[in-house]
Amino acid sequence: MTVTGAPTLTLNDQGTATYTGISSNGKTLTFTYTVKSTDSSVPSLQVSSINLPGGATIRDGGGNNLNLSLSGVPTYSGPQISPTIVINTIAGDNIVNASEASAGFTITGTTTGVQNGRPVTVKILNASNATVDSYTTTVSQGTWSVSVTSAQGKKLTDGSYTVTADVSNSQGVPAPEANRALLVDTDASESPTITLTGLTGGIAVQGTTITANVSVPDNDLTPATTYNWQVSSNGGKTWTTVQSSTSNIYQPTDTSEGDLLQVSISATDTAGNTLAGTSATAPINNDPAPLLAISNLTPTVPAGGSIPMGISATPFDSDDQVSVTIGGVPSFENITAPTGDVVTSTKDGTFKFNGKTYTTYSYSVTAPTGQAVNGLMLTSSFTGTGKPVNTFTITASNLTTGETSASASQSINVTDPLSTTPIVMPPSPSVGLTAADYTPPSSPPDLAQVAALFTQFVAAGFPGSNGMPITGALSEIVKNEQEFLTRPHV
Image 1 (cartoon, rainbow, N blue to C red):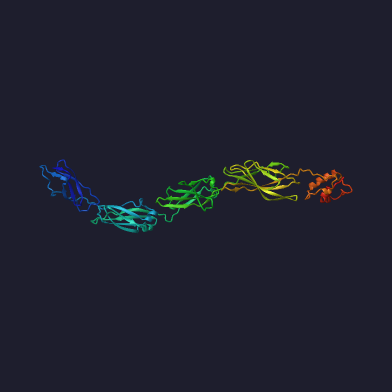
Image 2 (cartoon, rainbow, N blue to C red; image 1 turned 90 degrees about the vertical axis):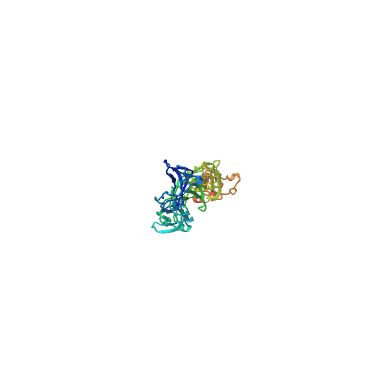
């Protein structure tokens, strides 16, 4: 037997078998056919016709054409195609998250050995195996699908479900039931908890590492969490992001001293849900106040001279600007500072001594940023009598914006000297002047001055008959010292 071209066989399931070869003895022709899921079901597979397309021939050894009556062609009665049904992956990963539930989702699958139009029943069962939803569709070209609406998706509470699918072929032969596990994870009532660690007494100390710790009840966060570290300089009314990254650590800097700190997060869980939250706030510390040191708490200023005040105020770090305030300085004293420091003064009160009132001033000495205040000098121009003692109140402050702080106040007692101006006694009447030519002081001198005048009086000789008897009471002398001690006498 010889064959030319490509003969074919038409089968009773509407399929076509193709010629693949002839046996070595020339007596058997071989045709191949692959049964498809879309083929019609038949009780047994049979050849409906032999086809010789395109001039194909089948002849015997004598050159005679094959009898195409199909006599002697066997009927195939082997295993038939059993119907099957499969459920495809649902929602990409068999997990329905919040956005997928809200939008609705599709359940799809495939069949084999099932004719077009055959009904498919799909059910969603909860963990108790109770039917939550049921859907019906039909097979088309070996595929099927049903749609879960938004309303139905939103009603699915978080938990585990089983999806089943059933179908049978046109002969009523059922396919084994298909099933697929489904997890619904919408985190409907879930919010992250964010805590800050690394605080000192609830305060975020500059330069210290602060860590944000995020947790959710089902512990299913992915590493792709964004941390937005924020500061507020107005008590939390507005916030500025200072660091946004996947890093959960932050170190406060000088620029944020005195601000509030918080972190807001945007996280994704394994179901694909987006979670957001914000931590509690924590204050960022200010720099400590400048270190104020005073070496002499009871200085004495020489008459008409100057002394170092022994005051120093040191900044905490290089961005601090230190200012020292010295209050209670009388008008007969003056404070100076090294070149580069700024010195200002304002009236802050009065000071009384020996019946005279002096204005007092508050001095402010400000050093350049990052430098200490020191090298202050105190100069006295006091010309009165006695030893006035003034109390200066001293405070050191940090003037840097956002870092304002001040030291505790300290006090020093400053003594001015006795006046070095000599006391001049009135001349004797022999020079032609009288006591009326001398104006007594506006206020009585102290006892030390009276003693000095009395010493000079005695050195000039005791009064005669016009003077007060030397035997008079000392209290009388003190009472009338200006009249008695300045009275001309020989």
